[in-house]
Length: 408
Ligand SMILES: [Zn+2]
Image (cartoon, rainbow, N blue to C red):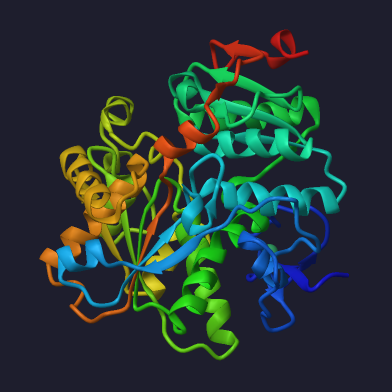
């Protein structure tokens, strides 16, 4: 039975197995029946009570949360906490692909295995595929990975790749890659990992909010993160909501950021719209090529869907930020100099959004702030492990071509 129910919040239908959706336009949710008791396990497995899997994998992936000294001083903040989900062994951060995505790959593969799913198909703009590739190696689990050809350089593993990894490079952007992966799932009958619809992915990412709450001994007042799809932000909002139902006070305001000139969620939110329209992403193809944080490039994020980004922002009186490449890079340089660790570009965008927020007085000096820096420590990771490039099994030149022809 397990410790949870998988439920559609709209029609209240309960599901079993690796289910991604019902017929309602609403994200399914897990409901955990017992209070959260921390376990003596490494990383995100401390929060196993509130993950849909029953057993942990043999990994140490997970966030670390600590009170900032350097950046806090720089910005004049007294209660700034950082959630770091990269690689920093001295601080007990062991995410071996250097990003937030190590959290979702772990909870997802653990859940999938327990539900009898022996392989997954994943579409990714880079970081997610890398996280699943590493785990495929590490726990011998088959992963079929689809990434835009332009993102191939992000596809490496910290150990030599094994035959569990099946990489396909798509000549298209992230949305076309997602569509190609969906077609592959239908053609080859391999389970789709599901992206934002996957509750295990979201609950794995949501452990950042749990880690923060237990470290700060309260819920934060403000939560900062850069978003492409916004799945991590939805996940942290859901976890905060779960903590509230278990007696924790507070409702963290979401402060989410995108990288200009590609800012569809920012534009839709600023126009008070629940729908993203084509006018929210003019010259999308060109804009995506221009952004510093290429992983923040989803043209079809889970924004309008029930329980998605729009509702998460609405329910927390949230704020959206548009961050230029220059602001992001400057924020990254500042962060590295005062916090002594390098960040991935998306995390630099999040730091820049906090700087904007302080300048615009949207946060106050003594507010309890959680800044989720969603990856970093790559310089050190490369030194300690090395980056082994993953070779694609095939290049898919035309997203509309028949996959039977090229996939064995
Ligand atoms: Zn339903």
